[in-house]
Image (cartoon, rainbow, N blue to C red; front, side, top):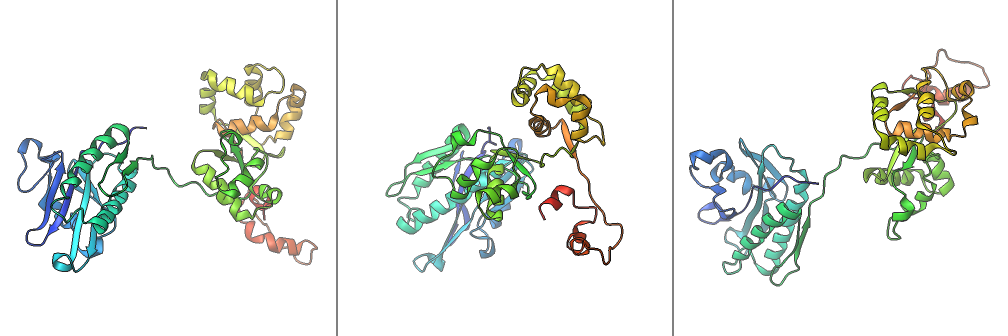
Length: 374
């Protein structure tokens, strides 16, 4: 995975007489005071234009600050304020700022910026690295190695700092938050988790994994594994976040499925996907044309049970559940849900109490799978 390149890094401090100043920049000249060269003016950050956000007022200190510095440059920093009577004005303010192209995605660097802020703060508190004029030049060599290593390798390993632990950094691709996991959903393993599981993993996840078989719902896994339902949801959500599982609906013969015609064309053209499907669903030898014919016969309103009877699917010795799971996971089948709506209030009936419990779900917004788990 390629990350956006860092265009520059600069280190700034608050000077007790001059105010905010740029102490070091890599490459040199990437951040200037005054007017930049007209030829490259959009690529150069004019420090006076951004200084109030680089060395800001206390309200913005010790938090991530990002802004557009020029039409082509974005800067990200984490200004630090250390209060101590040993400093002039009783405080030391500094910021290590990263510069990027304004069109690049910078989110993967946010943790790096935060971590470098913490590291430099610790170095200053422990040894006065930043405020001591004899040791301050070490900051420049750290910046230079950071720029080269992160741009070349997406990590920076063992950057040595005198009298301190080496600096180790790594970029990670940011992920979108995982979707909400519902009790009626069925987790399906994307990878063979038993082969990669580690005894140091979370104990709840270790307890849940053996029951993730593509057939049991989240609620059923909770019951069989004897794990609190909320913890099972969190475990599945964690595995979902890292792409270890995907979620499908509970498979029942009363389910209705429909083809996504455009995506079915992808299956027709992708031989690797075809072989994958055959390996996943067949119990005996079958050719792909048999499965194409069966899938093409799916019609709106036709339940799986009716479809099986109409085409005598059981005689073909195909794993029917796995066929539909594969279709949903690869996005050429989708489940058609039914959403019950109450038509009238039942009074005096033996089922009136049950209806009263269910009434809040009979609003056309909750499908039958959801009701199954209530």
